[in-house]
Length: 396
Image (cartoon, rainbow, N blue to C red; front, side):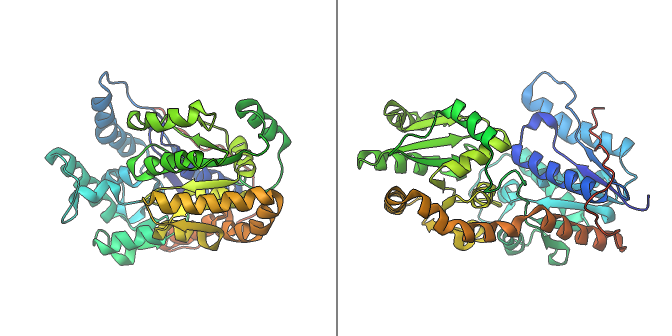
């Protein structure tokens, strides 16, 4: 075959759901549309066992994975590193054939002038190695205009090499009904309770997610007499926020689940009244995109990237302003309580139009254009049905 792509994924053990999602969506989309004419394979090795967790991660990232690529995977026309924190791998690949997706600049903040982060010399040295790898790549794909702006503002990458390709929403996230997923959700969380407004948050416990704001808003609403239930999908809240979480849980107003399948999470998006995205920094903000695709109204921090993803389909609050968040969410709850069905219907069309910007088809076509720039040759036209082949997962 004249075209071949290797999708370089994170180690399985990293457990980065968002990075795995991006890799899986791209690989599956390429196989579906080009599987008969393009050799598409994903590289997702398992870590070589090393006793100490930190040492294991360092040895595997910076010794074992480079060795795998040097000895097994240098034959592709295009090599695409999905996670910018793995960009050091570009040093082991033909850089003129390599693409790196940059999700945010968190990995490089310790190198910026006037940096707030205090990191060891070793951490900064590793960060420089990662950054220099990304700078060597033929193209750097940013998942949002906001991420592109940050790269350019700090002069981290040659502007001529940067392209913006928005992340794709999995087709499972839609406004259409799924009775089986609804039943599974009811089994896990119980059925909706009449008169109780369900608020949803999806994400990690990283500081930038501002779970302190999220929980305090829910506490404020509860103290104001609002019947709310905050449902959080993600890891357990940090210890320093246990007091707020326990206050809500004791009143039946808080539930946390660590993982839901895509179909069940989509059912939760359709069932909830509002999504709250309290982050003060994001690379993309996938939960907002998924929520609007399911017809759920989002309330998000007023930062550039969430404006980009949410558009006119979301409401916005100043980052970190608990009082403003409480007032805005309370107003929307009252609107929803008066006429829940018409509230969702009123926002549905706007939500779906915004979500259409993040379709898998758009993601694939924009990514292919980048590959064509790198190779200097046109790809075969995509077809709706192609013989599908399995992507390769390497466990060397």
